[in-house]
Length: 160
Image (cartoon, rainbow, N blue to C red):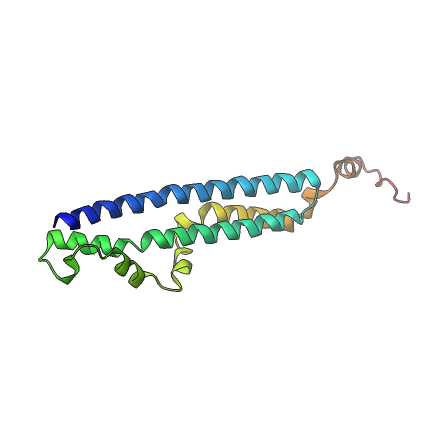
């Protein structure tokens, strides 16, 4: 049982280690996304916003993949907890992390993570914001054109 307890505490360390990776991915997603939105406004090029949408999708995939890896350790932790609470069974032999991890990992596992609010949250907001700004082109009208339209004067170079 001593090896089983060591395995359990090691799993706790591994699972909590993923939290740092997940927060780093979310931080980079926000940084890159907001930088691209700011750059799109600076350059007055709304097509840059599509790059922001693409980066949000890429970061959300990486985030979902890390979450999938983290969640794959939960069944083995549950097995070990059951060994200490209930009668020992065949799952109570130590050093079975890799076996249980690969059993729980499915090809569609990453897509299951997209349904979780904690996984998609900052990426989804950036994606929607960039898409909204892309579909609203009035935010990318040059400032001179806006002031001349407000005064009722025609655009420069336009016939009177």
